[in-house]
Each structure stands twice: as C-alpha cells, then as structure tokens.
Length: 169
Length: 285
Image (tube, rainbow over all chains, first blue to last red):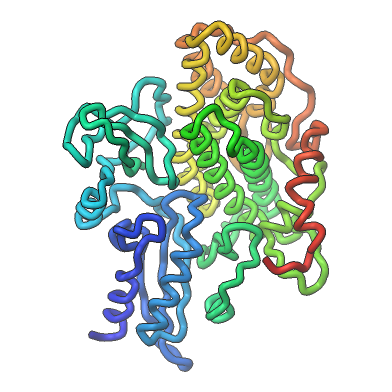
C-alpha cells in the first residue's frame, strides 16, 4: 500500500463515538483523506462533516482520527471541517445500514429532496419505519428527538418494544 | 491545531472542545460583500440562536415528560451549533466585532462574543430572551421563532457568502424539525383540554407582541426578514386554522433587538450564562 492508501485505510477504521457500530466512513461523515508530501515529511489532511450542526461528537471524532493516523505512522495530521454539501442520511453506506439493523436500530429511508420551501408537517411522522426486531410495520412515533441528534424514538405496536430510528435528513 | 493538541486531553473551549468549528473552511469574504455588514448579519442570526438555545436548555429536566425534555435539549443543541458557526463566521469576516480580552487569553473568538459582550451589544430578537413560562409558552415561542428562522434560512442557502450559505443549508434541515415539533404541540394543546387550550391562548397572547420583530425590515447585506413576512404569515395562519385558534390582535412592541433594544430578561440571562467565563478571562477549561 502507498501512503495514501495506508492513511485512508487507517481513517476508515475510526468508529462513530455515539453509534460505534458504524465507522465514520459508513456514516458518511468521513469526506476525504489526502496525504501531502513536504520537506517536514508526510502530512495527512482529513475532512469530516458534522451530521448535525451542534453534533457534540465532532471533537471526539477529530481526536480519534488524529490518534489512529499517528498510530499508522503519520506524524502530522490535520482535521478539517466541510460544511458544504450538508450531510445527508443518504450517505450512510449499505454496510452501515446493515450494521444499524444488526444493532437493533432502524436505518433511514430516502432523505426528502426539496428545492422549494419545506412544507409544514402537522400530521403523523414523515416516515413509518418497520420494527427492526420483529419486522412489523405497525410502529408509532414517540418523538422525533432521541438520545443523539440523528435519531428519533419509535415504538412497535406489534412486539411492544421501543426502538431508535436514524432520521432522514 | 493538531500538533498542539497531541497528547493533550484538556479542552479549553467552554463546551464541546472543538476549538474552531470552521477549521479548514475558507472564510475569505467574497468580492462585493462588505465584511462589516456580513459580520453584523451573522451576529444577528447567531445571537438569535445562542439566546434561544440558552432559554431552551433551561428546560432541561423540567419538561412534562422525558421525551419532550430530550426534544427541547436536542433543539437547544442544534441552535447552539448554529450559533457557534455564525459567531465564528462573524469574527472571521470582521475581527473588529470581537471583544478584546487580556493578552494571552486562550478564549476563542466565538466564546469572546458569547461571554464578553453586554446585553446592549447583543442583536437577538426579544422573543428569544423573554423568561420561560409554562410548556405552552415554549411551544408558542418555538413556533413563532422557527417559522421565521426557517423562512430566512431557506433563502440564505443562495447567499453570496458560501460559509453563510452552507450554515443555512444545514440549518434548514434542523429547524424544519423544530417547526414541526412546535406546530404539532400547538395543535395538540389547542385541541386538548380546556386547561391546555387556555394556557396556549394565554402564551400566544403574551408572546404575540414580539412576533412582528422577527419579520421587521433589516436593510443591508443578507436576506431581509421583511421579505419572508408573507410566507411566515401563511404558515402561522395554517397552524391557527387547523388548531381553531384566532390570530391575536395585539400591537407589536416598538423597536428591535437588532438595534439593541432588549428587555431586562436578557441582562439576567447573560449574568448567569457569562459569570464563570468572565470570572476567569484567561482560564483554560
């Protein structure tokens, strides 16, 4: 492997601190890994994007990336923030979606694609995910806000179990 | 930032520990944009988010049930994130807006702006600062606030300033959830019991004088909130119609927070929010 591949491989190992079943790559938060040569040696520039603007896990993600890349032998690591385009739940990989389901979480459906004004939704939830445990489609929204910014709370009226659903944004 | 950070687990930003929320983002002011006007606009939008976030976070552990407690905390966090980016953007565009701290102080610009300005220097709408009331009060406050903020952010997605445009594009997704939460609770309380409806109407009556300020004209750089007034009216009328609640007939409060007109509630809020930071202007956290 060349340096670029080694750096990318190391960065891809880093997991999301709040949903550790996912790597940052699977979550779609890891946007770019670039190795730059220089007189002082190689420098890795990693670009990440927040899922939500206030995501408090960004600092931990940055630390984890720096430590992992240092372990992989890269002395100089810079972590940059990318805001544009904004993160979308559509960027969660197939492997990531499978990992979510395996952990008992419901993976997001397609994110809404809009160009005009966002319509007001006063009715029931915008998505009705199937229960990740029993597969029943009879689920009800408890709250669109959960233990982390990216998840909503649901309850299955089939098996009665509550579950978390990664929101479509 | 990286080398200094190596092996140092201490974090000195007063919160999340990510020193610069715009690390690596190109903050060059685009040609044709006046840096001072851009900074002033970002401060206004950022102060709205910061003060609203502070009021929402005061709800932590006080909501009627755990789910709504978590919802309010989530919305406070989204707005805090928006505030951090916007205050940082303001400081990068025009460093002159940042309060001067003692030499060698490690306080980053966003924290200097949040913790070392006095009430009259804040540019937030007064709706964000008034004291909390009951649950109906926070529902009405969030509805009025997020309907207007969403309409402004939607238009800011095409701002000539790419940083502001990116913050807006992300904010739209978040505030859409806030607006739906508030709208649904408005409907639920309106159609709930006599008591819930009485409280909702009382909150709407108390907060309505602050509504006009959200869509008051603001000339200069950025989306003028006055240009979204019709859209804001249409969404509010939709909520009122579905809920069977009359649009209040109360005169707007004169002046705007954008011009530095504030209620006494802001000074009290800031006294609590800023006390620790001000006691240790060179502190590391």
